[in-house]
Image 1 (cartoon, rainbow, N blue to C red):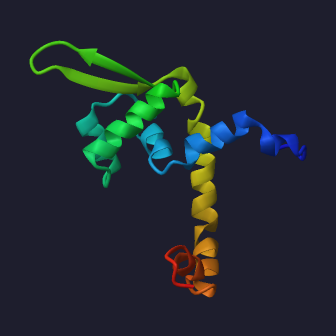
Image 2 (cartoon, helix red, strand yellow):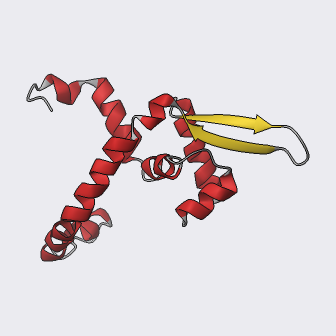
Length: 127
């Protein structure tokens, strides 16, 4: 990472952080890392994601060039999603962030507890 302050204002950097900061984007990318999947298969791999949110996430990832959609004819028609070459480049950073979360997540939660949840109350208008 650079110490150049221009890095903070770079719209490409903000774009990259936006792509991984959306709750479901990295989860769906990770779910597709081993190969293509149909929406039902992806929901089973992920757990806890609604069909609507999965569809929105897949569309967002497709819009950004990270996922390709393939439609097959037949009855019933089926759709499959897979990572593009660009999408595959996110696997290593997502994995690195997951390792960081595993190694340091308890410390973050401890810090939140020490602060008594004040951030949550402030956001809710209670502090």
